[in-house]
Length: 295
Image (cartoon, rainbow, N blue to C red; front, side):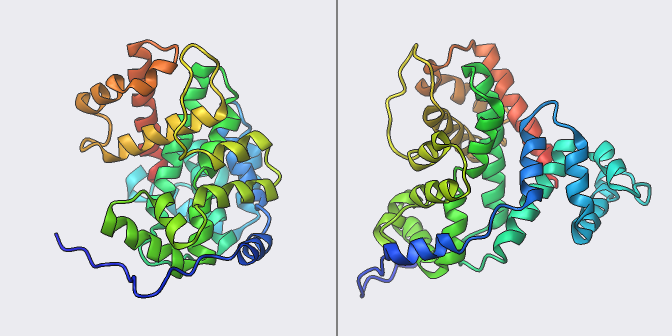
């Protein structure tokens, strides 16, 4: 298969630290709708009222949610007239995932970066977040914080696609041409990776230092100590690994072949979990992702 070569006549225009700092400094604060959505997504017993109120304050968002609830897919055409009814019909997590995606996208504006798909980005983000939350249950870590970490672990990709679209597009082309991981291509093209950018953004948004550190190192090789307590840095690596594996599986991760592949992976040896536990975990992630992705 022919792959168009990446331009190499001129040296890469690395993103200067001052430029990066300015871009990050100009980012908006996280909207209240996103924060409300994260709370609803990350906690099993989160009240629906906060999420409903955040949606009702935004007319365009309300229309989007009601259109989804009244779609033929859910078989309730013309029957759902309020956001409360929509939450009851769709489920709080489906509505909240829609709210999170829309509020995040609207906060940064349209993404005009060749080769970058927000839908693909968001599906991987959701899969990693769900995986992180389920893995956190086994590892006795805070599930809400784990979900937030999964939701933000690749936010640097989104930031670079918005603030430096030409350079990020060049990094994406380099991935295709040379088979590099994106963070390696970004280092060559921009002089910084999306993991570093994401960690800086998380700091600006005043998230816990443990989350910023985990975002910064989620692509770095690390020895996960068997028998020792896992950290969030270990957890996001496991969740990211699981998400990529599920996305690559021909069956979407739901079939026995994909499950067997996961269970044989030596990374799982660090978890104090039985084979049936891991199988149920994988099935829960795939099932919840399929519902939430419909939004």
